[in-house]
Each structure stands twice: as structure tokens, then as C-alpha cells.
Length: 282
Image 1 (cartoon, rainbow, N blue to C red):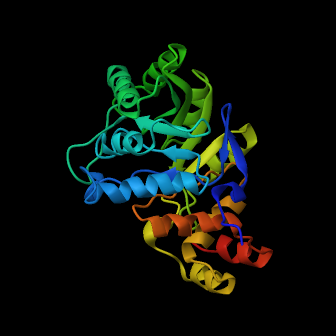
Image 2: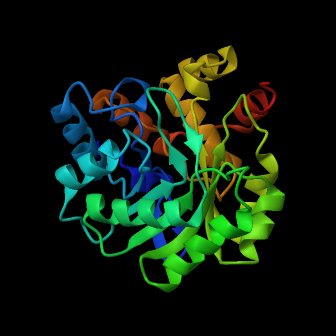
Image 3: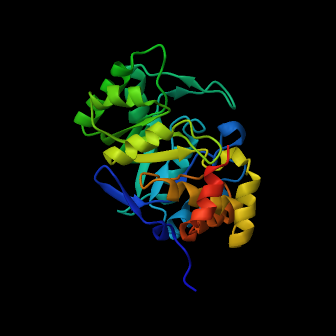
């Protein structure tokens, strides 16, 4: 039997780029607390290279993952990049230690962050550059305006947003075209459902972070997984893929075995009864 790949999940447009609907989130290839280098850099390299072998052609990262570590590992493992690979990164969060995150949406910081990402990723242009989180101390218009300027300068091709609401999306769209939204969304957390609907209506990609409920798998998911003979992870990801054509899940892992398990979601076909049971989970 041919091996499943991310291509089996179908494709989605992210701006003018077309990618497979199962991406890879590169946060967890760093050290504990998303801080410092991984305990086993070789394992991180193997995961990244295996992701490409499995048809993943969309990788999501950020300068704050490490900080700087995830982007550097991606370049070390994958550069020169295949033409079909889209690397999306983010700026706008500072790190003061393991597990600590602090917004910085000042235009001068976002410029420096973007230019640092370009250097670490060895790119002349970042395909999708996302504001990691609005900064309450900085007007959103100023932060997004900085990304619009970087786009005009050719340093980024497309602008995305992360951790926003529908009003903030509308504010940003008055300044620059937006191609994606990345918010927390999974079978137990649907607070961002209005963003999912907005993305589907407007032809934007929605990137759900924490797509696996932070590792907490509801019993309904476990039951359906047993019936299908696949892992609960594959069912949770399959539910996301079935939820909306705008969905582009980006599950992350530091394990090749878990990566392969995630990609198995590309072949999950949930029945109407399965979907009703999963939709009822709260």
C-alpha cells in the first residue's frame, strides 16, 4: 500500500501559494519551555526532513521559538529549500525565560524581528509573515502598518495575523491584505469559530494552534479512534480538516513517530455520526 502523505489531505491557497492541508508547526523542536536548543538536535533535523518526505510543504515557526532556535534549525536541516516549501514565521513576542512570552508590537521591533528571521532562515523574502499577537501597548494599526511597509519593501510576500478577533482582522484588512489567521482552535476550544467562518467566507487560511487540545483527548475522540483503528491524534486532526475548507492544521512534534501519526490524519474520513459526536464535545 502506498504511504500516506500530507498531499492526501488536499490543498489550500495561502495568498498566491498552494500548500497541502497538513502543515508542520516547528515550536516543539526547541528545548523545554520552548527555550533554548533541543536536547537532541539530530532528532529535530530528522523530524524536519521527514516532514518534507511525507509531503508537508508548509512549515510554521516564529522568532520567539527558542528564541531564534526553531528558525535556525529549519535552515540547518532544509536549506536550500525545495521550491514548493512555504515557510511562515512570526514576530511580535519577546522571551524572558522558559514558558514566558511578552508582546512587543512596536514597528521598530517588528522590523528588526523580520530582518532577523530573514537572516536565520537564509531567505530573501518570507512567504508569510505573521503578527504573533497584538500588543495592548501599541495601536494595532501601527503594528500592522509596519508589516505593510515590509511587504512594500519586498521583505515579506504576504501578511498573516495570530491571536486576533474578528474586529482586529477587519482593522488589519483596511491596511494590508491578510492571507491567514492563526488562533487556538480544537475539538474542546472553539472560541475562534467566528474567525474560522470569516476565513472560509473570505478565502483566507485558518491555522489552528494547539490542534490537539494541548494533549487532552476527550473520550469521544478516543472512542471514534478505536472504531477507525487510528490514533486519537489522527481523529482530532481529521475533525479539523472536516470542520472547514479554510482549515490548515499545523501539528507540531519533536518525534518522527508522532509526525507520521499526525500525517495519518490525511486519510481519516469521518462519518456524519462521528462528526455529530465530535461536534457535541465541549
